[in-house]
Length: 383
Image (tube, rainbow, N blue to C red; front, top):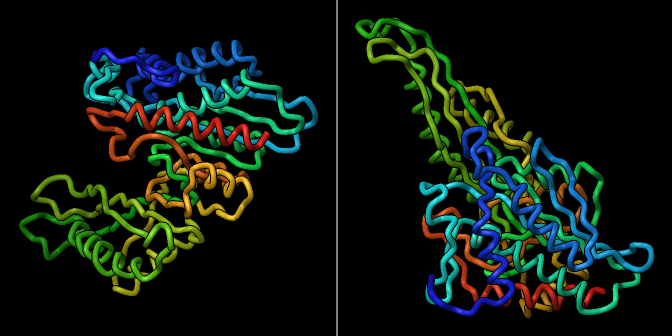
């Protein structure tokens, strides 16, 4: 590793990367590199040393959200939540170089560097240093929540929301390049099926080819339907999109296939409900004389995010960053889950989403430290 002096934030991130916390959905059962427990326990020990109140919120066997609270002296009248996720995706090298953090030319490389252990390090130290640096607030509570399961199913944020937890603002850690993001798209995965009639490949006229019917469905969705989606635009997000990601049909070449299934990814805009989207897709296909039915919804509700940038705490955060206008992103996050539960939520964190999930994931050490400084300044301003 390059010899370079690291700040406390950089040192913490290096330690976090060296503790693999791959979402178990991406690994065989029992793989030693799966799960967030090691990271959660490591941070819990540091939180206690900083004088924070620590709680583990069970989510699944062996997996729990970490809640570290900077409690006020009096009754809680305002609560600010900092909520990065502790899990990462996997990679081709487990536990190779992805989990051996290294510094090269001002960048820290390793799995989770930007998505989102960089946010974990910056947010955790912002809370810990705020707790160490002065007297507690009279009525404002600051909560660091290390969430599990964001990379598949958002189990941690859904458990936190279901518990009735409330806050006046949630800052969800994602690599936004330190831009405050108040809007992101939602996501809906659907399976569509066409049915036909099987026949011998030598007499195809006696059957009805479900793959052929599905080919027409795919073409219609990827062309005319996609064009229709471009007519409605959100000022920060642009238009909704659709992608046909998989197709399965038929058993062998000499049999006319009697069924075919596709899986689609439909990115939604604020104001679109899953029910409306499904109804609109089926209505569109019927209007083109195409026969298909929705057989499954493959995800939990993943609503779009559209937080009012005029909220006082959001304005204060924008002002701390000297950012004139909020930003929007196309990907889904835990912020959508928390906002749907009534918690005003934004995204903010160091790093570039373009580096997330890559074989050489990295984060700028300068931006990492800037992220900790900005968050700490904001927290001090709300106490």
